[in-house]
Image (cartoon, rainbow, N blue to C red):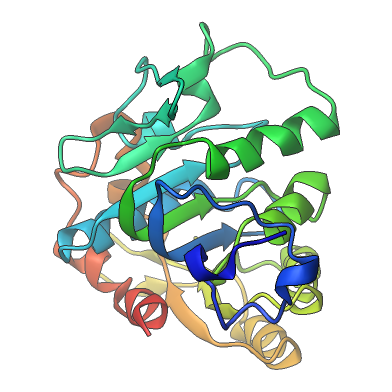
Length: 272
């Protein structure tokens, strides 16, 4: 049975405590849990996750980020924490912390070689992500960002049923086939009564290095139809940009102010 009094989604999840599967850790006080979701891999979901975490931290919030993409964990490296280890004791698992104070948990922090695949069946994978919620010592956080696995499979379902998500941000790219796949994730969230903050379209356009003209490779008609059909809101259009692409290798020290400003509506949405 869930404990609504200790739940960050108290009063907003639409569940009754008698049928709630959420198990909260009494040592953790987390105000909001934000899922970053997409129906398809390779759309920049993890990059968006860590950008949102970094920006919230810069605004003065206490922030954690959970890498729930168990089959393809990348958050640790994106956060400049490659090779770090998380250790447990009788009280729980202590997450790794960045220099600017963001608490991070990823399966890569618990295996010897991050290049080796995770050859686990669904039940064990689902158990891992629920332990990242219940057994990790997150402490007091304003925001916990969850980089969710792509698709609508077992792990995503477990996350939505076992972790009290305050809402999700949906990441897509401007291709009609991808819109169709991402729509499945949106409809899954709706069926499970999870709030959808809006859409972030990644790789939306590029800026010509010679004339600064914005170049789009796909028509806006498909995007407009996608937004209307799913009754949601477009929060940001992110460019194909070397500055964003170099995050994994160079970190966030050199991210331009223009990139940060592109997330203004995203941050406003999750702050509400």
